[in-house]
Length: 433
Image (cartoon, rainbow, N blue to C red; front, side):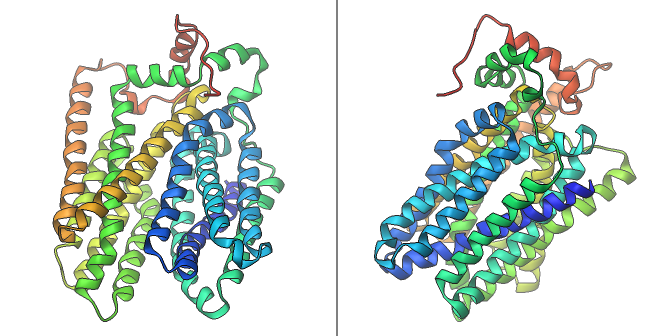
């Protein structure tokens, strides 16, 4: 865990770079073109790249060492930012879209490799703790990335911001290369299981999801959660201009700082709760946290006083952190042979939900105020989470009392099932598609 803490520090630096360039690139394309449409297209290009590459990411992590995959994506993103420093400004309007593709795809592949590798990095029994460390590091990096972008750009300009961004990716790559941690998926260790690996790709994941309504429901709910979250991301700037037209940026900063602080508290508070109660994070925790998160975001758009708004944002951040911990820890319990593909499918669902949600909420906001739009989109999350809870309660009642529910089964419990899937009549599946 000490080495993993160093790894989390490197990951946090990389995450800081991601959020810094998220702000810097959007501002830069608007600075160059003066077009809100071009700014939106750049964001759409970045999301589309992540969506397209997500199914491929699982195959890459399964076939290659995750450490190598993450280093390559960090270096590629660093080179993309260096290209902006090396190419004259006249060529930047076209180059920015290529940079957006590299950043969107690189970030998705990196995250799939990271989520897949946690059980190997910290041990299966420490998945929750490892995910908590990652969540804490990411939350701190999010705050630093968002808050430092403005001062860096205003004080030094865009190109130094890009240089800092490139450096953050290179720091992460160096940390990954130097740490004596094993990132190797159990699938890649034994050549004796090569034939099973080849047959246990996306086809086995589909069979696993088809045979596990709870797991499939979690992935689907995650996509709907992303759909709902897109609405408040689009609506918040509009809402801030209505509530505080004199200084909307201050309201946005307060809201996101409170949200990030809530996510920072998640690991410590959840760990304390688990120790005191002896309970575990399961699929029901995931669904309840998704409901609380959505209801908190809806409450934020009712126009409460600023102190209450900050409290609501804090609750939303804490609930958001709980969903992340419960979801990642549960998917990491899947057998190593399919874990990479499973997280690839999950990334596809999340990216698709967020991209479509941003487009749909933006269109609806043209004709409606922020409050009903956010209520509609997050209401969908609440309804879906409620239906998922009913599904899990029904499944818990029907499961044999002597057998643990699906959410509590470990990776070792599930491996025999995968062997059956891999030798089924469906035959080999070509992952290269």
